[in-house]
Amino acid sequence: MTHPITPKVAHIHLEYTVPVDDYLKMFKKREEIPTQKDYDDWCRSQAEDYFSIMLSGDEIRLRSTTEITTKLVDNYVNFIIDGMSQKLKEEMLYEFLVNKYKDLSEEELTQKIRENYGDEWFEEHN
Image (cartoon, rainbow, N blue to C red):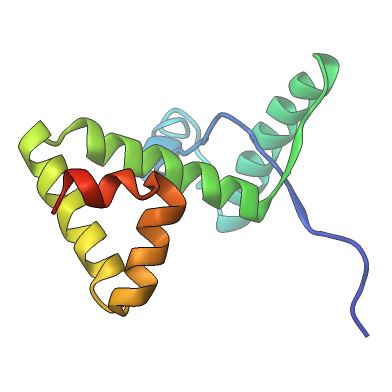
């Protein structure tokens, strides 16, 4: 049986990371040596503090994991495209279109051209 609830993720615009070495430096002046539990509790406390600050502000937007992944892919693809030369973009688009249409029969391709450009295309390109 499938559950009707879609998982969501609270998207927090902050990744809070403290390397263990930096954490241990906070204890240099103390005599006790922190344990793994101390470190875990401290990290959890920092995250809870940040999250409670978020709750006191406007609303928190929940997004599905698919939505987050889609946005990540979109951002990454745009980053790649922005770094490409116009010539490379044209070459890649040409290759994409050739691969898309090369396996169509002549009849299928003719129909697709007629749907998109009408019979005038054949008059201009023959």
